[in-house]
Length: 259
Image (cartoon, rainbow, N blue to C red; front, top):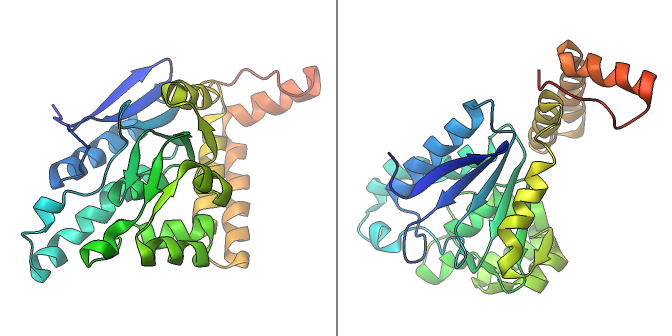
């Protein structure tokens, strides 16, 4: 049984919940539990979409600095892959993933939010990559995912200075997708995720794969990834159901099986 990270499932939506008082610091143990929760969410057929949530007060205030402070260079060479892989495991869940952000999402917490497909945040949330203020740099994808999301110039400003980014600025630069009152963040994220409980799951999966993998390569290679995913979904039951329903009843009326 995981101590700090749980996967809770209700009505097709899985919530990966961080609960490590007081600030959800991401330790080596939390990293392992995130990987396990991501694997379970991936494998379970009753999970159609995922919410990543740190609770009402804070999303995650960063990696565990006290733990890292004791590590040498050679120690970090050995464990840095674990730091990245925990966040990458969330990014690689082949289902829609939304981060429900309250309070602080700093350092590793910001990187965890960046791994989601969509970020819904409290209107008083605070983001940042303040690693340079500790004499280090982001190590769980911040230099890569932030620059792809908001552009290299904005990412450099945020990462070079280590400054905090308030919610309104985060929305303006595309770091978050929606702001709501803090009390509504989790419900709003669950509502977004619930859209996919009756979706053509393999089509959604193929779309996510095409977008994410396509961003990693040149346009021509990305188009080939799309072509292969497009052809692949023609092997699914839902493609036949969706097209038959469209022809017979018009758009938006198909009842999919998720197969």
